[in-house]
Length: 157
Image (cartoon, rainbow, N blue to C red):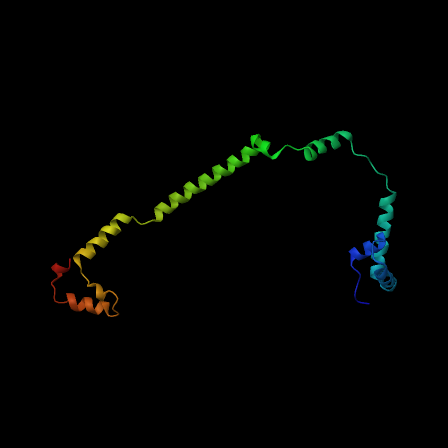
C-alpha cells in the first residue's frame, strides 16, 4: 500500500473518535503497513506513559496571579490611564514626527523654486519669441532658424 494514514486519523483511531466504517479501514491498513503501524504503536506508548505519570498541582499563588491577570482584567477604558500604554505611544509619535520633519526637509531641497519659473514663463510669453501655432510643429527648430537667421546676434540676446 502506498497511501498512508495521516497522523491525525491515527490519533483519532487510538482515542476511539473515528467512525465505525472508517475504523475497519484504518485497522486493516495498520496491520498491512509497517510504517503506519510503528507510528500507531509509538502514539499508543506515549499515551500510556502520559496517562500513568504523576500530576502536579499548580501553586495557589500562581493560579491567583493568572486569574487576576486574565480573568478579571482591567476594563478597556482604564488602559489609557496607565504609563505602560503612553510610553510606547509617545515613542511612536516622536519617531513619526522626526521622520516627517526629516522628509519635509529632504523634499524642500529637491523642489524647484516656483517664482523664478513663473517669471521666466511670463517673460517668454510677453516677448512672444515663438508663435503659439508653431509650438507643436514637427519642424520647430527649422522654423526658428529661418525666423532668426537674418537677425544680427545683438537682437537675439
